[in-house]
Length: 242
Image 1 (cartoon, rainbow, N blue to C red):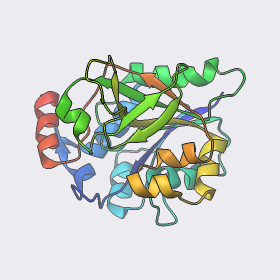
Image 2: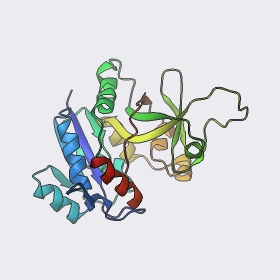
Image 3: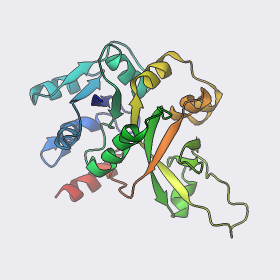
Image 4: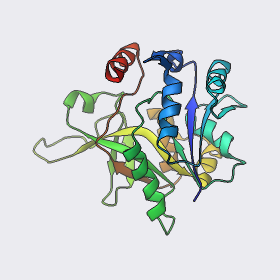
C-alpha cells in the first residue's frame, strides 16, 4: 500500500492571514509542520500543496517537496485531489498546515484503519477527541461528531450533538480534528461532486462525503495538539515549543 501525506497550505487564511509564515521557535509554521510530518517516517512521500508563491518558495528553500495548485479551490480536499489525480498512490493523509505539533501515534491509528480494512468498507478516516468542557461543546468553532456502534460518522455539526434534552443521560461528546486519511478514489469523487445543502449550511466539507454516501471511520485520540488559527494560538504554540 502506497501512502503519502499532503499538507494543503493557503497563505490568505481568513482568521489569521499569513499565519503559516509566522515564526515558531526560529522557523516558519509551515516548515515546522512539514518537518514534523516527514519525521514520523510513516509516508512514502510528503508534499506541501499551495496556491501561494511565498509558501512555495519557503518549502523550496528548505529542500522540501512542494506543488503549486493550478486552480482556486474552496477547501483543502479539493487542492489535494487536484495534486494526487495523476499519482500512483492508494491512500493520502491530509495534515493541516497549521498543526506543527503533528502527532505520530494518531497518524499511525489512521493508517492502520486502511491496513485492517480488508473488505475496503472505509472511504476515509479521521480523528476525534473526547471533550467535556461545556463552553467547548457549545462553541460553534468546535466541530462535533456523532458516531455509530462501529465508529462510523453519522453527522458533523457546529451545534452540540446530540442535544442534551435530559441532562442525566450519559452522553460522550467528541470534537472532530481536521486530519483525514483518504482512499485516492474517495477524494477524487469528492472533487467532482457538487456541494449539497448540509455542507453549505454548516460550512463543513466532511458533510459532502456523508451526503453522497461515503463512509468515514472515526478514530479516537487523546492528543488534541495546537491548531494555529489566531495570534493567541501562535503565542501558546511558541510557549509550548520552548
